[in-house]
Image (cartoon, rainbow, N blue to C red; front, side, top):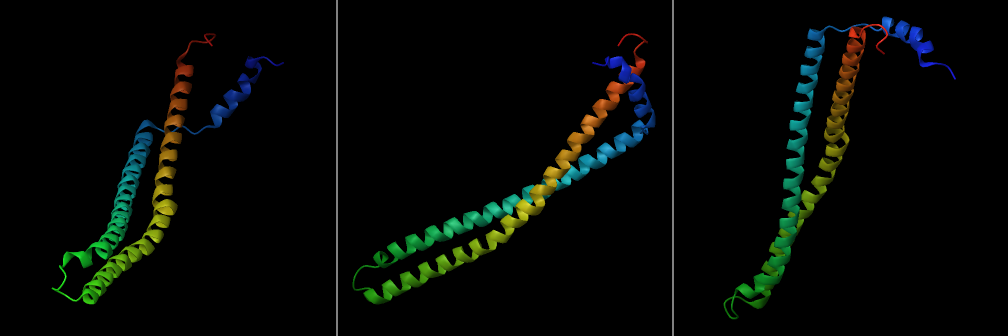
Length: 154
């Protein structure tokens, strides 16, 4: 088994090939990455709010159609309106609520696809970039600290 120090010249040559990035460039890149992350997070939250509000409308429309179809004929006492008219009006109103809920549900499907395929994915990609940037920065700091060590202190 080879000693760890036998790889040291090879590692030194690899590190010598590395292009050093100045601290201001690194800070500018970090700020730009933070701005991109904040923008993507805002867009993702906005789209999530739209989807949740559409889902609430679908649920409320479905509940309204159920409640209306079952309660509307009972709202009028017998003799005020003909029973058939009351039943027909209740069914029509329930159908309108149900149609509205179904239209919202149909519109919700593309919004969900858009959310998961675009907004959520982009946010995760930027978060992954930020993690890689932080790891690279830590690695750079470790290599700088190794250079400051006196020889033979490894």
